[in-house]
Length: 112
Length: 121
Image 1 (cartoon, each protein chain N blue to C red):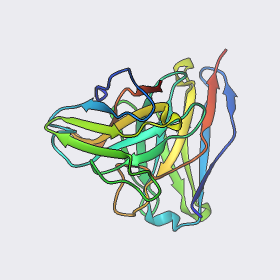
Image 2 (image 1 turned 180 degrees about the vertical axis):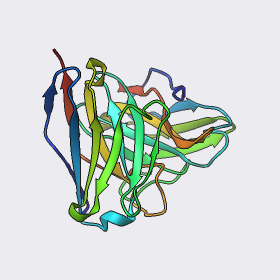
Image 3 (image 1 turned 135 degrees about the vertical axis):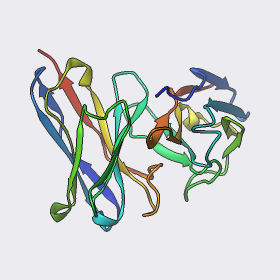
């Protein structure tokens, strides 16, 4: 099973907005509303930022938002802060011969 | 407070067996799925599989089916990930994780601290 496709890196200036894309297929991203996004700082465990396409867990800043169109999901971070610099991973439920979860390859966000 | 506490780092030789653990506390262990995620050195996250300790229902990613075994001992609120014959390519950090809600298994709110497994001759 191929990973979901994310850009390897994105960058944005302090205070600006950026969007990270996550491209899948109709068997995963496009077929279900079960896309999630995680943030991972170096040496730390991942942190859930968005689940079910656009839902923020309690405690996650409203600067983080998620959306989906067709087979592409997106994570938008507005008002970039220094602490947003991290790796970001999308994931999706997938169902082909069996049901499981697939991650994207990850995107390194640099805040300039 | 929900906590997932994983066993310590391991150094093994190729061909050896290994079982690492993840102890859950602060919630009803049998009512929530618990999963495993691999992160190879400098690489991304890979979903390995998940188990429901209440009835031991287990699901694997096709990439890991037959390569590892996920089990759980509900009497001690602990999930396990095991290998029968390690390879150098199994060198990675392994995270256990669980969702906040009992009716979901496809995203994880809570994560363990990770267990580094090094396989080298």
